[in-house]
Amino acid sequence: MSEDLIIVSGGAPLEGTVNIAGAKNSVLKLMAASLLAPGLTTIENVPIISDVTLMGKVLSNLGAKVSFGDHRVAIDTAPVDSIEAPYELVAQMRASIAVLGPLIARFGRAHVAMPGGCQIGSRKLDMHIAGLEALGVSFDIAHGFIDASIPQGLIGAPVILEFPSVGATENLMMAAVLAQGTTIINNAAREPEIVDLANYLIAMGARIEGAGTPAISIEGVKELSPVASHTTVGDRIEAGTFLVAGVLGGGPVTVKGVDPSHLEMALTKLRAMGVQLEVGSDSITVSHSGAIKPVDIQTLPHPGFPTDLQAQFMVLDALADGRSVITENVFENRFMFADEIARMGAEIRIEGHFAFVTGVRQLSGAPVRSPDLRGGAALVLAGLVADGQTVVAGVEHIDRGYEHFVDKLASLGAQIKRAPSA
Ligand code: UD1
Image (cartoon, rainbow, N blue to C red; front, top):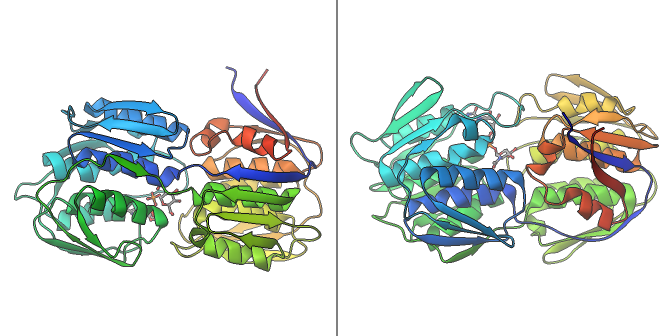
């Protein structure tokens, strides 16, 4: 069967400006949150990526009317009459689990298949479940489905998360907004996408304080009303990916449409690598020449270094003048990318959650396969500077989260194209 490939010839200098799309990890949750209030909402700055299409299908399957326009989605949740998210959809995208909280809050019931998604560690749901149980939700998990109900109603409560899970924080927020009384989520995730979701919920009439801090306080309200229009926050991970491209291609490369404060730790690491940065109010420009300084990186929940930029930054360390250690603290199995880039001549030794990287002068182009979304993008980045041609398969992973990835890189001067396999 023919599949699309991304074919890159290394060595072209990169220069120019890239407009950053809305954040994948925000828009998927905003779409799920729209279920909380019956009626019509419009979300703007929506990236054109396959995960958004899939979330559209999850919502239409529940009965919502979903229509996509130019970087916009209109969702009418008034006709929603089902509480089921089927396996065929959820298995393709773990983020579908975000409908759990809203369905429970609006209908008192949810029947959601256990998710699949990127193969990057076991990605359990225990914190989602324990947190919702604290609010009075009762779960029956059988035959690959989560069946949730609220026998005594949804009641606000203090919850402490074992780890600041993004997904668990979001599901709890989306349930607590319609619970009776006050919920406090302690050790909450602080990602900018959590703040975006909180702002959307507040615009719906929710009472939330502290989003973006480790303690989010939510006072339940009786009902919410749909938000006429909400603009999705810029995608800091897409921006970080293009900044790495700019470093590899020399620059100057400017990313526009992102809040630089959302990338503080990544920018700190770029500076330590010797990269020149210019930071504007909604833009960042990188330029670089000469050797990259090796820099140790450890992934952590926000505001720590994002796990979603780990593979892209590993490309920089793989080409740096010396050794570095990359520590993955968020997902247990997120180094599959290292095996692929090793096929391009990178020297990386994995031990548990550590990657010991010895920089090499030059990578060599090779056929490689995307192991996951971010790893796939990182392989394309590696191809930008590898000697000869790199052919990246498994492009569907990249399509999940990057809008027009090939076109945007080509607009900077990359020698890159997308073509079906022979
Ligand atoms: C979200 C992002 C993903 C990002 C991740 C961490 C979306 C659609 N995806 O994923 O791109 O890499 O945040 O920034 O927004 N865990 C448990 N039990 C739980 C929940 C999580 O053990 O109930 C573990 C996971 O296996 C993982 C860690 O906690 O090891 C972090 O997961 P979490 O923050 O929940 O990530 P996601 O919301 O799945």
